[in-house]
Image (cartoon, rainbow, N blue to C red; front, side, top):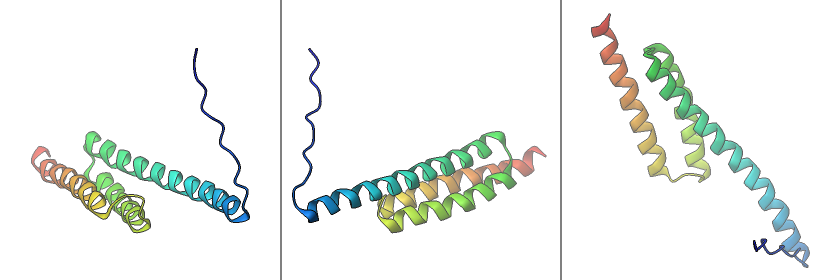
Length: 103
């Protein structure tokens, strides 16, 4: 027999009800930003895999902005944001260095 999740009770106090409304709105905003972050990172990695240094640089600039925004809002820790930017930057730079040799 599968056990269902216990149903959450609605808060009785007005302040509690307001907090639930605020949490739902914040959760939606954070989820949206997190999704935008993942998409930006994937776009940079795709550009690196295709071997297009110009597109990779362009996508990296956009991703950098999104990562900074997310760190400023506290969705991710600032160190995680710096680490992610550093890793993406290294991939883009490696691609830029490899591209002239291949041409």
